[in-house]
Length: 445
Image 1 (tube, rainbow, N blue to C red):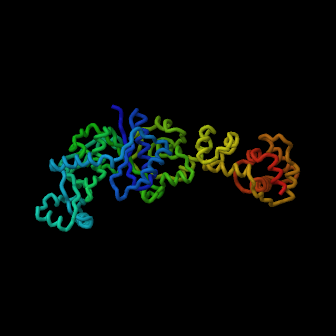
Image 2: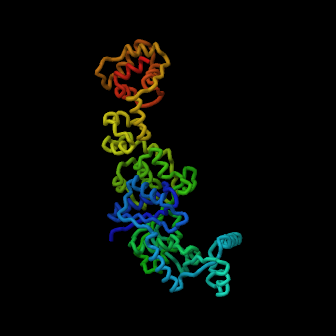
């Protein structure tokens, strides 16, 4: 059976590079193994969920080129989840709990103060009917926990190798909120079974969840051996801080708005935390060859914006005009010509920078004239037309001989007069793009 993998984000915030890495890894795994990549929105949390964030997830993945073959929303499956809940309750695997968040927090802190792990004590399983009636009179609504059977829970992790958990050292997980809505743990396992998911690849923060989900998967009729898990270290920020989509840390939206090319992100994330060399790739398919879950190390890799920007520049400096054309069109820069692109791409940090260079060369600017006599001399020594790639050299050689100037003293006044700026692409390329007419005009101010 071909692998079926899924990316299951919740629409409660902006996707960040950590989320993107999970989506990318699953997509590459599916591509390498001729599998199916599924997008599934975990949108059962009505209080925190948002259609704006849901649409943002679609936009971000489309921008990255991570395309799903199947799409589902968990909010469409609430009836199915309720049927599973009823069956689990009938067989005694679910039990109601009435503790408030404050009471649970007190229990947790007390256990920690005693040097004991904060495992739920299952006190709610022994509530008398009188106690339950009292809670109901207090208008307490129960949340429901899944009873974990004692014993060892094992699996062969795709990234870590053999894993083992003792169920007695885990808290019975909450599967149903006070408002009756299913928690991710339940809906995810039900969907994994119904959608015939074969491989679950995600972050290390889900390792203990996996132990719980294996028992739950079996309890609802699944065969745990049919489901394979892989866990990768979480990406950290440059200072080792954790990433949070609700805080907007290195969000895909912000990177897109800043001018990062999506393949710069994909190229970086595909190699981050592996022994692979960071290479600038223009297509997802090019990343498949070197992709292997076994290559990911165990330490949390740090995401560097400096590395990402350098990779972005490398992509742009070698990008063909045919590849750049649709990107330019999206930025309303369809007027950029192939010759201009090829002349300027080696100086781009962001693709939209070329729009500025076009304006400098083709629209009105305010020349900066620091030394008028020198500029007038420069104007008088301009080479005859037609100009070519050697014109700048001929011109500056003549100026050097006439004035004795060289280096910055020679070149800076010319750049300021012709562009109005101190820095930019090579002047030999800019001079050709500006052309004889505008050059004379700017030297005549």
